[in-house]
Image (cartoon, rainbow, N blue to C red; front, side):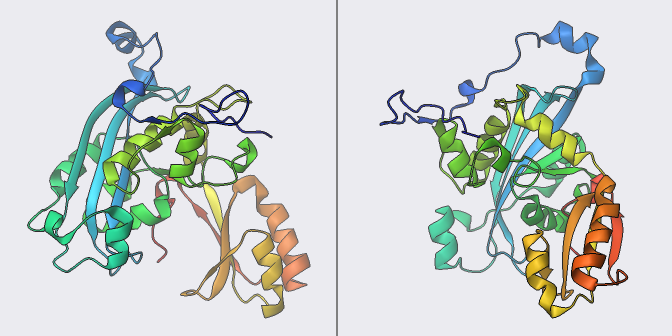
Length: 297
């Protein structure tokens, strides 16, 4: 399907982009103190979170910047109801930044020198949140789980994996590209900017359903899924597995992917027919909502 490109002229020759400002957020007209008091069970608090780090490996790299935006949302409709307080801070990693990190984030050693993140304040914000959302939660969550006493107990949502951007016509899932298609931009790869950009993006409505993107994410984040591990699979089956969206785990030396519970029987049948040519010799286990995107043990 054709995607919406907000800001594109009718003749298709120009695009107008606006730098994201907080007053660009639009909230439902019905939301006011009286409605909230009468419908308190519908109102929940969430947190959009983004980190910048010294590298990709959560076991060896360090967080150097964090940005969190708390917000209220309607748990039934996925509508963003109000912005709450932000938190943004630097962390001195105790080592020089690589040239790659400097180029990507715009951060310098001088900016980080002597700075520290108040993890107590981070935990306080996360403790009030019913869901924590990141654009690539498989990356952000393991970093936060290492330093937070709250994060491991919370449901995390991922706007990269739990919103079907392909079905909406978007061939890129990068936050800065999706932002441009929705008519706005911000200074990318700075933590709080990315958090606000993501929340604004999730407030847009799907053209086919009329529902906010955030509603789709909420639905997916609440599900219990099944982790399929195609261990002991024949080498010659790797292309079949890759084409079925399995990913290679070099540490476990196996292919794996998550599926919905109702897909389990069909997936086992496919594995037995196309991969093992006999009985399934891999593993599978349920993944609860609070365990999504945790680091693989």
